[in-house]
Length: 185
Image 1 (cartoon, rainbow, N blue to C red):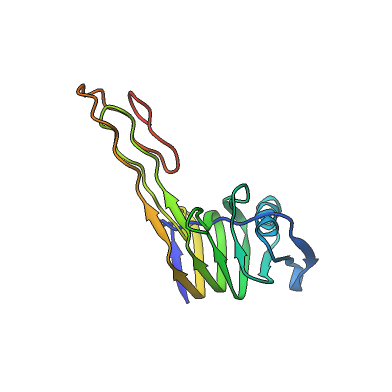
Image 2: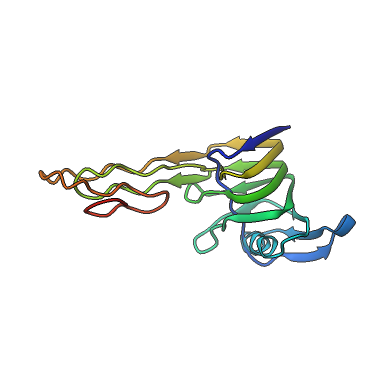
């Protein structure tokens, strides 16, 4: 068992989950596709003060329009039970982004996640941080992973801004967005 606190790691989940009452007051969301996973993440983030379980019922591959949203569980614990299945980012999407709260992930393979920082703006702005292809853990979050495999994930920083010949101090690239032409980004 390994705890990750306040470091870079990407957390995100997707839509349309089946909800059932879980043990000891916990809500359980059974997910078998990207839409259900995304919706389960939205639902657990919107239901504070109650512990939640997200339980995988099969392998899930993310696709366009079904990217995962940040997990926000500042006042509760979220358990993600993979049951030996795989969450696959298709080499295009980051997987989990834990913005706040306590998240426990177990028995899951996190595969082919991809995070890319924004490009710097014109005038030599720096490229942004590409962090958390598989798992991003924001400050004040606690994530514990048990029997989790990280396979083929990539985090790539953004490209630096173009040299326009005039040092205008182009904006730096953002976490997921590009910098501006002048000033900060």
